[in-house]
Length: 350
Image (cartoon, rainbow, N blue to C red; front, top):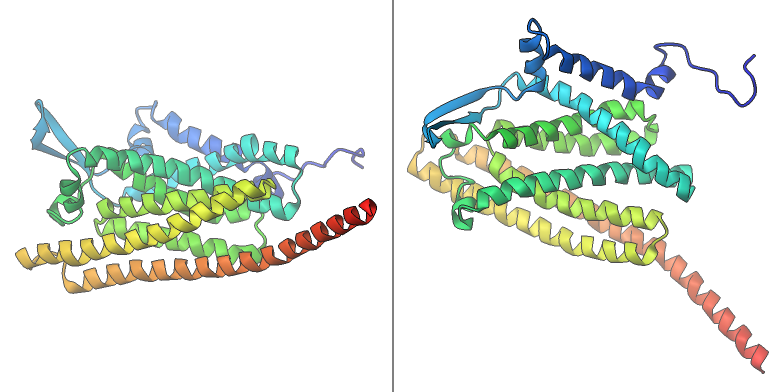
């Protein structure tokens, strides 16, 4: 029998063993790929997983004698997504162990609150990273002029939109990898069955939207829409974490800011979608009817984006109604308590 106070180690390769040690296992697998770069025989294979592939050189578009190198979507992206999914699982474990778990030790949250805190903490870290990454790329593109920047959403489509700079492609590989990593995390984090459908739903919606935009060469407009969305969602999860910290006043301010930005982001998304897919791509199709900007791709893309905005707005309304119902009993109880205290004070004075 094992001594009291000591946990029995789970059998090797059992479910519990994999769950407890998944960060170490993933780190070892990632290091194998990294080590492959140093061995000449395995370098081509390892680089297929780690490096960004499908580069195209444009000598005529180079600057100062340097050729312009851009990157296209291609089948090797699947290998990169596999490797960077491992990186995302490892980053998830690092954030959990060195940030979120330490907060929990200080706050002593219940299991339900800790699960919500973990989810919001992980999403906040990803949204903040993605927004900063996207905003930096957008800022670099917009330095040429805002009118030229917005018109670049459709000008030259599809020929000039097939290839993209290295950092732009890395951004989309990381986006796809993150939302893919959500699915194994359901197992690795022992997610409850009743919580799985919601997580699978939102991860699938993100994944499908980003992959379609990436494959159909809508990367430029999609990056702006993702930056808008991630900014708003990041503020929501920050406010949610403050609420779990019992920082009620700060949380209320955060939720109010989120409500305002949510409405603005949904409106901006619909406007950008309408201008890009109807005015912009419509103009391109009128000038060159042979392009792939016909009525069917434009209608399906714009309708899909608008339906997503409608669905998010519906969830937003339901959230606000539920929040107002939850806050009403608490406010009533607080008011009654204040009245009782005031009455008691008056009786003592009398």
